[in-house]
Each structure stands twice: as C-alpha cells, then as structure tokens.
View 1 (cartoon, rainbow, N blue to C red):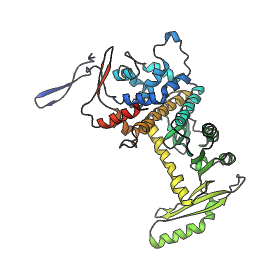
View 2: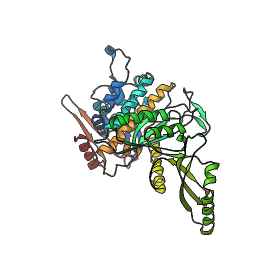
View 3: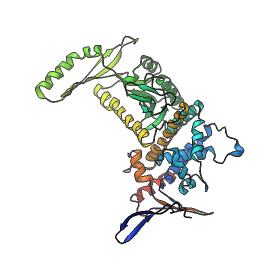
View 4: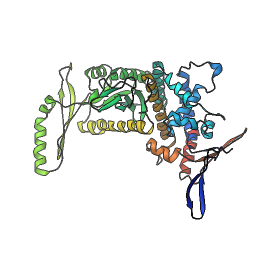
Length: 437
C-alpha cells in the first residue's frame, strides 16, 4: 500500500512531460541482496549463535523485538551500507528487511538498537570473539596442515570525548588502537584498545588463547605467527619456541644490524652508481638482541635504488630459502592491511562513536561479524566467479543493492527484483550455491 510522505518533488521536464517524484511507491526496497545475506546467515547459524551468547536484561514479558532480530537487523543493514543507527528510523519500515527477519511489522527503532549496544559488557566481547573463532573453525571440512596468523594494529580515529581515547604521536590524532588477527581473509580477532599503549600490548596473550583453541580442534596443525616489527617482542618469540609455533616477524633496523650488513650494502651502492639500476640482495645470519636469551635466524633483504639505502630485516625460526621466506611469506602479510581497510571503510569498523569504551568494542565486533557475512558470501557463493575478489563496497554496489518490489500476503512473500539488473545469472548462481548442502 502506498505510503505518501509530503509534497511531490518537481524535476527538470522530460521534453514536453513534467517529471514528479515522491516517496509513495509502497513496499519497494533498494536492498534485494538481503536475500543472499539471509541464506549465508542461515548456512552459518551466525546471528542465532551470537544472540544466544549475549546477555539480555530485558523483562521477557515486555519484549517486542527478540535479541536475535535486533542482531540481524543491525548486521544486515551494516552490510547493505547503513552504518548509522539513525538510518533505522526509516529502515525499520523496509518490507524486505522485515521479511528476511520473518516479521510483518516495524523492526527495532534507533533507540532500541542504541540500548543494545550500550548494554554490552566485557563478557559480550569474549563471547563474540569465541563465535568468530568457532565460525573460522567450522569453515574447514578437514583439518588444515598449516595456519598463518597475521597480527596487526591500526589507528581508529575518534572525534569526541570517548572513554579510552588518547593522542597517539605516530598517527598524529586522537584514536583507539585496535588489534586485528586474520588467517587469510578470515577474521579471528578485533580487539579494541586505548591508544596510549605499546602496539603489541596483549598480543602474546591473544596468540596463546588462539593457539590453544586451534590445537584443541586440530592437534597436528602447524601454526605460523606473521607480523611486522611492532610485534617483535622477546616474550612472544620465546613462547613460540617453547610451544612449537613458527614465526616470521619483522625486525626493526638498528646500528648493530646495519653494521653486520655494511659490506653488502656498500657493494650494492657501488653497483647502483655504475648501472643506475635498482640493486637487491639477500643474506642471513644469527643475531641476538641484548634482551634475547639466544641467537635467532635473521633474514636481511638489502636494496639500493634512486631513493637510497633500504635494508629490511626479518627474524624467523622457519627453515627454507631466505628470498622465498621474505617475498612469498613475509611480504604476503600486506594482504591483511587490505582486509583491515575493507573492514574499516566498507563495513564501518571505525564508527566507534559511543561514549563508553565497552560499547565501542561491541560496535567493532558487530562490524567484524558483518565482515564475516561478506567474506563467507564470497567464499561459499561466489568462488570461481568474477565477484570472488571484490571488496565489500564494490560487492554491495554490484550484488546487494538491487531494486525490489515486495508483495506479501498470508500465503506467500514474493520479491520481484529489477528486470534491468545486469548480473541476474550471477545472482541466481549465488542463491543456488547457498541453498545447496
């Protein structure tokens, strides 16, 4: 039924015809891709499990919107590009969003969703992280031989007086300093931290928890820690060595390291002066910093170009060829930075604007769960297609934002997607893949 709101808008005429626009189209949605998100979620059981581990202090006799509906409403809308709670003032009336939540009436309001976020606790954060790790484990049909865990920290700029926000000299702004852990494209940890700490703070404890949980499921799995020099801490390296965890971690250059490689770097400088071509060479040696109890293998990638001397060092307990370990293993950690950008820019992980720190941790985890839905959509439904590697923003524009007319009665919900949609075959293929066992 049409819901006319306000006066018609007058646009420039189309030749001799006037052009009028209003918002009286009735049960029409711009989010046809919600149907795919629902199937991904049903396949994973993600929101059902998330709602089951969250505390709900509300009086059961007065609940209009069950917790699982609120979680789904927030996550699905986030994937569709609605990062602001205020969006739900109108979005709660969207017929398709109501239908995928199996409702025919208005969904939760912005204040209701705000209360959901602000009632979060530290227990909620631990519970949601357990679900993230469990979803990762469930994604494997058989035990993997090796898992490479990527650790990295990033800045999350804030623009208010939020709890836990401090000025960070390196990033030159007020921010949080969340810690992320990925394995390939899958997200395992999104841990919000104040920014007045060392970038590796709590990383060792999180590594220990992850290793114990993963080996509980796969006792024989080989685990590799990969991180930049910000995580090169003696305690982490020593723990890895005691617990048969491999590592490939950046090592910040210093005077001692540069002195060891001085002869090589001088030769590269001379070769560049003669040829004007970038010079590159690898070497390796054993080295112990003052705080280390033993010497460790260090791979040095030495380079000289028109930008000058550029040495890089990596410490590792892995066997293998030095160039291969650096180029194929260590440098591949750059892909994690793309995943963090996708989470922040495409799925709004940087929308930590609540006053309370725990509420912002909950928001970060909600965006992380939204990322899981997108990543699983790519893996389960789009593998082998032209959309398999699309970023969340591009995937949203091409696959999820589809005009749809919804007709609902007591027997059926019919969703009529736009006839002019250009990726109809791919959409149908994705839907079929998600419905298949």
